[in-house]
Each structure stands twice: as C-alpha cells, then as structure tokens.
Length: 124
Image (tube, rainbow, N blue to C red; front, side, top):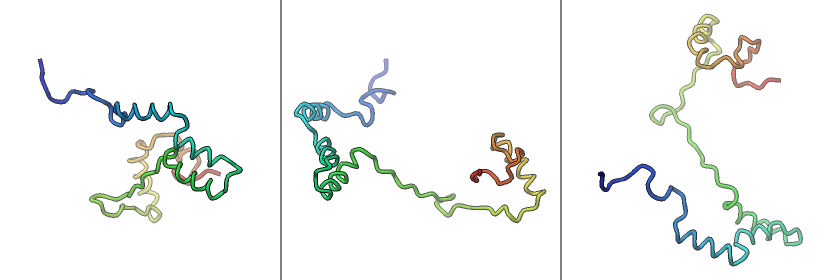
C-alpha cells in the first residue's frame, strides 16, 4: 500500500475554479446582471454615445476574446533561422533532394502532378 506523494490524476484540474471562486460566481450570477453583461449591453445600445460604446467594447474585449500570444521563431541555439537558396541548384541536385525528401512530404500535391510552382504557392 503506497502512502504520500503525487498520484496521477489526483486533485483539482489545472484552471478549474476552486470552491470560493465557484461560490462568488454563483452569487454574482444570482444577483442579476454581471459586469460583463452590462458592458456588452452598453456596447450594443445604438442610442448610447459612440465614445461610451467604444470604451465598453475595449473593456469587455479581454473577457470575450483571448489575447494571442506572440511567438519568436529562432534557429538552433536561439540564433537566426537557417535558410537555403535552391534557385541556383542544378536539375540533378534538385532531383537528388526530391528523392531524399519527397517521400517525407507525402504524395498529395506533388510536383509530378503537373504543378511546377512548388509546395506552398497559391494555385490560380
């Protein structure tokens, strides 16, 4: 019989509200209109001043639309991303690369189907 220590799946799940938060949310919901409801109501009121509507939209936005995290892409060791210019390669060299990396790319949209524009380019 094991004792102590962490157990897989035990405890409250990450991000789940605790009992105090759940109780506070229940009381706010029972008391009537929530602050977010009020902000959205003012924002949607066409008779309200446009400046006030704008302010309510700005205030409500973080609760309705999550902010997107910015991502910094880097190469190995945090350095610049390495690129290779394939435009100056011979047809033989390109064929060898296709033989090596072609199977990794799969068969859908392969250049053998008449599209010589390369992967990732828009088709017209």
